[in-house]
Length: 615
Image (cartoon, rainbow, N blue to C red; front, side, top):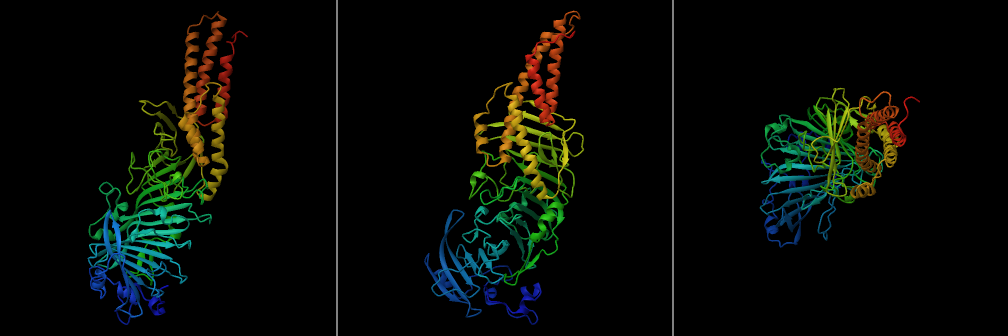
């Protein structure tokens, strides 16, 4: 680890750490003085005594040097061939051995307490700085940071905190974040965040994605919950800059006054509800909240001071222990609810080690269609993800179960949609739309739209949709979902499809059969079952409706009252039509056993001769 600092240094206030020359402050350690920035926020390499020698290096060559601030300080300088944005460059890389364990024969530093400065174009100014911090002296990194310089001046940085002690944080390529966090560490307990550098105050401010907080709730080394805050200026205009928090690292403008007044304007919160997150099924999130509001970025304990950090030594991020609590009580002006039902053949989201799962490390995203919510981020899966939107303010994430479709819904959502398709092939099948027509906070209208149709194939407005409040304790909800709600939905689907088979023997389309066989879990299996069941029901109902029309037409109206056969035929026809309507109501309300009983009654009616009304 870095050479231990005297206790008096560690107890100094933050301003003294940034300005060690102030009254009686001890000198900063040599590694800090070596990488000190000038008044413009620049880390200048050209002024170093070894700079001319560095420029003379051929690619692949290196030399050792000692610090001008302390002869005991060990360093390496090398020239490397890098490819930055497709352009090959000969970069100067400066390795500072902060902890004094570099040996004469070493050609590189280590990843516990060393620092790497890259000058991409050898113009004498730093472009990137990657630093590893070993807080407890065990020879393993506990924190790391990647500082980005633009035009030679420090602009922003990524920070990582290794909470689960696996020594994994950021994946670094060419001395910057590789851009693929699948190769970093979205598993277990972790905290990553971004800060912007305020050059006038020489201080960090929370910015962009601050934080991503990952939670291993069952201690299996995987994450079962993830929270992401969008830290952006409070005067942010969501129409003018809809995805500001996700584009800040492409932003090239100067630091401005508005960047000091920061708020949490978007919170993404995803959870594993079926309990399958594991080494075999990592990142197994089903449920995602997307919330927008204007909460000032002011949290107890958010100032993270570390004496081993290069100035500014204090970064800002809500503590890992508090991010979930804030997400669950965030004062949202609007809330989007997403439920990942199945993968989407039209978009590739996944990464190693299980790309076939096609899941994102950040959780379940909202969408950029229909109900636009700023700072949603991406990439986005649009097909086979259920969306529900609540336009009203709320400070609590409340869910309910609905028997009508046997699904978990967002309380207060006024509308929703589910685009069904790209299951085993590129076909678009249908869309399910949800509406709360009476404003009671629960859906009461379902519409099934087949792809390309000008009108819905089925509309259901159940009188009793079977609403049931759900616990806000996620562990209890997970147990309820896996032990009761999901098995019940699977069983209901199987029973209904089996009951409909004698009426119209159908086989699922080949691509749906393929999707059903490829389902990686019961949640996905249930979804494909739902689609097959709905398509079967529409076909069966169409057949039954035609049969009802034939019977009514044959029976006619104005039946002679002294013709027993025609009277009996009229009664049978009306009983058939009436039963079909009752079946539609029972199916729409999710009353599976009643629907099966009515299907059997229709079969019996069709087989039976018209009864003599006189008997």
